[in-house]
Length: 235
Image 1: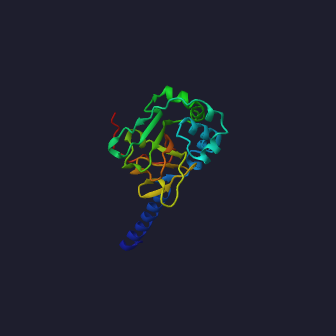
Image 2 (image 1 turned 180 degrees about the vertical axis):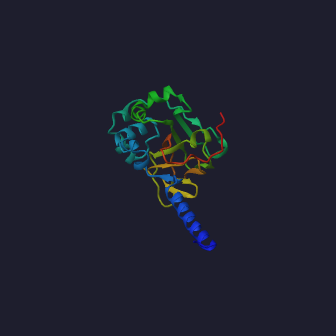
Image 3 (image 1 turned 135 degrees about the horizontal axis):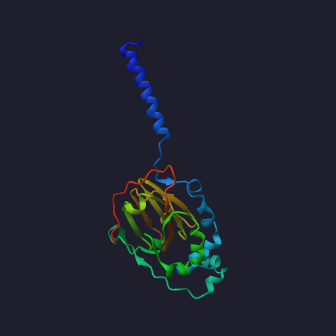
């Protein structure tokens, strides 16, 4: 028969093994997620250079750079009259430094028909993805930031955010990036990430030009923990 010491030792070993198993197989909480593993359906969208280029042209960023003109002038839409883009002020002015703007297509079950009409090609690609909760653009002028904050709980706790950068040209002393819970990723033209916006995060543009992003909030996949934000949306 086991003596008392042996009993408690055996119990401790079993308990230790149980804890290790729970830790190893518990849903993981991360800052950034691999796009191919998390939302593989997005890859065919953001890797479609023609669709993303035509979308960027419609955002009418101003093509005052020779290299940009050479890249985008091959598209018919580049030479067509531009439809008016009605950028809005960022909803939470208390968390922005500078005139950060956004342009919603879909958010909180509200469909922005006039914006979807302008970006119908992109919307046709995206609408086939299930469980999209928000779709919008962000424009950050030079030397502006979205300061560290937690995402709206109503949105971020049940979703992960995809962000795509249209036009950042970083150099050593002029960079653009996203910071999430202590981890930073640089954003340059064509780069894309999926991150947990329920955690404290920020977005910064320290380049010399406006930088425009596409953001899509999609329901969290099975196995990803709910978010941690306690910050509520205020209209």
